[in-house]
Length: 222
Image (tube, rainbow, N blue to C red; front, top):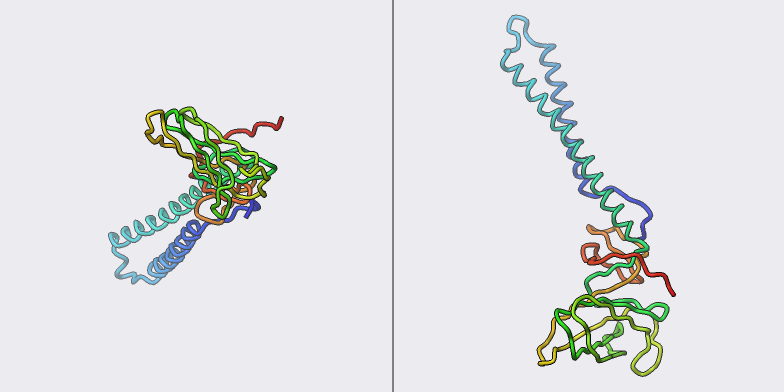
């Protein structure tokens, strides 16, 4: 779901239930102590040591209530801050670990990292069925880079919009395979809070916030 509201988590509910149980016990304890004081035998008043111990227990329960209230407030503040941070990704161009990217408006973009210069590189782009629709050979510099695809297949026909995946392989001049990792690049349009971790929506795909490796302001179209 898109960002339309923020609700309490099950963890917060557990703390609330725990606090309610302690509060009930606290009230019961107070009622028993008051009744005991009212009905004590004047000839044999409540033992001072016993009374002191009960007061200490009374104070301990009260302190536990306050501690739980503080922990609940802290958890709510942390959750709210985390969700606010995730919402700030909307409208930003992010890079996340993976191979998928959406072809939209005649453009799909991927990021990559090459461990060293790749002299014999091969780029393959597959559709949702796993069929290669475009391939290209060339060379790649070492380090971070981006690969942009205009949606034209190797057969010269424009491919339909949707999700596509990329695979980049290559070797150096001696034929040694170079490690190349790929990543998805896109604009975040919404954030999903329905699970345990926020999911960033890019096109029709969703990615865990923990997989984000880079965030930037989108470059205005020329």
